Amino acid sequence: MEDSFFEKVYKVVRKVPYGRVTTYGAIAEYLGTKGSARMVGWAMNSAHTETLQVPAHRVVNRNGLLTGKHHFGGPAVMAQLLESEGILVVDDKIVNFAEVFWRPGTPL
DNA sequence: GGTGTGACCAGCT
DNA sequence: AAGCTGGCCACAC
Image (cartoon, rainbow, N blue to C red; front, side, top):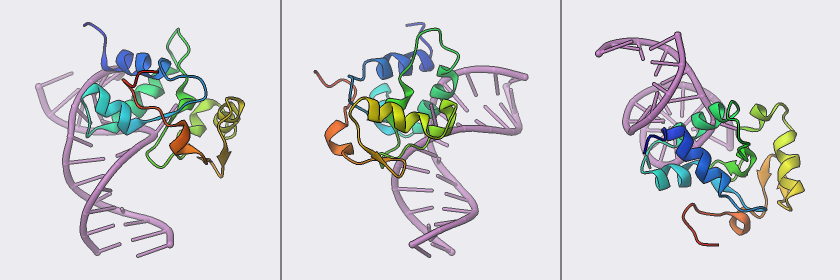
């Protein structure tokens, strides 16, 4: 696999089903870098440059909080995108987080 | 090849 | 309760 850590993250994030979200820690654990969720977030930072679109708005922190909303070009963009997919977001965090949470590697 | 950094997490103060 | 620190690992300079 020549795929860099970033590309692996992109693939996983793209696999997130519509109306579902995942966490940095879950992705990190899935990739094997369990103790380093920071890499996932950092990968998302670079995801902006990716040719293929990466639904980074479906990636939140462990609390279901939209920590990276500022990186979507606007503080309200991320929440709006999530709501557009049927995900309830209040105060920058996902209300039904437990319901929409999707773990990488989980069969649909 | 060392240094810095990052959208996290957990623990301590 | 809220803020700070360390730890963790991969990438860019």
